[in-house]
Length: 354
Image 1: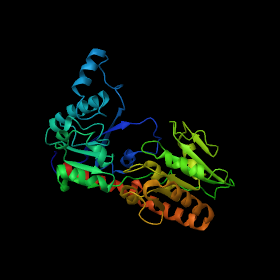
Image 2: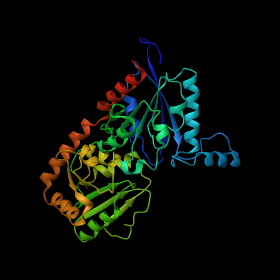
Image 3: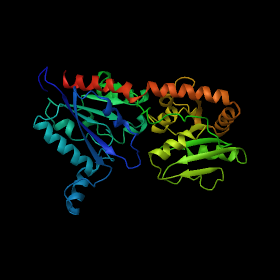
Image 4: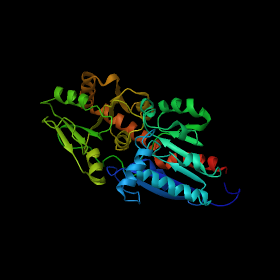
């Protein structure tokens, strides 16, 4: 670590590039709000695959994949390339802190090989029941600090690292871009929007859509993948939407319908509340951490009858739906990246020793 009083903590951020994310989604958004006089940020985006790895020999690549087979199934050759480049910079004394924003994909070799003067932070996103199959506990032990995006992840890491090395830091939202529409939607039906695919309970959504068939309710699903809902006349799937179209779909909706099997942070949940939508989702600790008040109706076990009742209650009581939407927007403003960035600044300063 550099001596006290020198300017600019040098932070090297490694994150996975997800092609389906828009320009205003993802945890890296907080970097825009860090004080440039305190932090020198360099960002490395690793492809979610092997495309970034410079050696093209198929035999060499196969050999490396064989060596990396155990421990971290999501770790790719692109992650290896990003780690090795960062490690070289650490040994040259050009980095004070390395932050792996997608710890399940990366943070495999560098934590145990870097010089101790370079601090290492990793953020993890997956539910605790999935973590054991995704992470190398040997690599975990080399981390100086772990941040998690849901309180139900904290115990899993605390058991392995100690509670003093684990920080719950909720995911944020770009509340300037994701915002309510200027006026009320005027489309004559009640529109529910669902965004994303991972861990979504489309069977529950199907149950709700079937129960409300023939009524003035529409279901708009934003995903590039098949959902199993395509045969239903009151469901429309939107694929390959850009940022502006995604925002418009949120703003034209009346409620966010987001039943999930499990969750930690959820971009769609945050984007929906930032657009002032009342939420219908699953009763989980991770969901309640983000919508702890009157912003949401949370249903245990995604019971289709209860979910359907929640949709009907919002459709029939516009005043209650508007109030939930107002509370949702207030919660999103609390979780604005502008408000959360100082927490990351504290972590970087602590790991860097200043």
